[in-house]
Image (cartoon, rainbow, N blue to C red; front, side):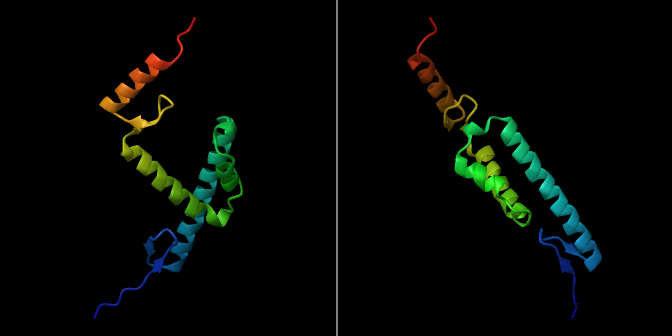
Length: 115
């Protein structure tokens, strides 16, 4: 019987030896920390008043060991929104396509015109 052994990182990747696994985990953790720091900086730069306070608090209070969980959750949320057909470009929620155009036209007709 064939015996397979290896080292599995927290990211789910398999390595032939422990050193490579640890080196990968160190690199992955550094990249995750960099992404989280950039996210925090971008949120501050993009007017944090537009974000719910609870979300900002959760992101700012995130510990380094939790970065992986937060980033996986953000990736799932981003994937869902990118594939849901929702259109937020016009600051209203609707599905792209004909329904989006109908909603945009309705909104334009109901908004106050400039003097």
